[in-house]
Image (cartoon, rainbow, N blue to C red; front, side):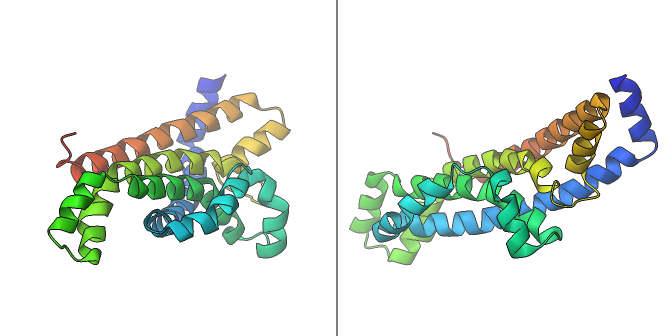
Length: 212
């Protein structure tokens, strides 16, 4: 049953067209989450004042699942593409923020002491010492947040959507078409895995210098 449904949706192009819509949405939300999560994470990691200012807010907002934001997101942003991308963004933002800030905050103190002894300018310490040392944590955040963004697709495409793999799953569930639900789940899993493999390859190239 599942195999027949998979074959049918592949041959008629339905699966690929729905996947493409979701991939675009995921990438938009993911890159926004990476940009703002890494940017704010660097600021929080470098500044104790920023840590104190944001810690409570982050710890309160982080556990809230993106699906719980749907009523507010619709109220604030309507039912267009922006609301869907924003929900996916929420799925990845906090993971990036926390991993980056902690990676920077826990930079090896010995490295910082050497930079201080050499009287290295502060901006060089940040760009050439702290951020490179935090790259493993940054990539960990990027990989975990990618999975989180895909997990949010179904929730995001509940917002008045008529396309996307999440919509396909939700619509099939309403009609009791469990074979289509399983096909959609498998498609998300396969594409998510392929994207993770690509990101892992980028990580291996970026961290080729890291022998630890």
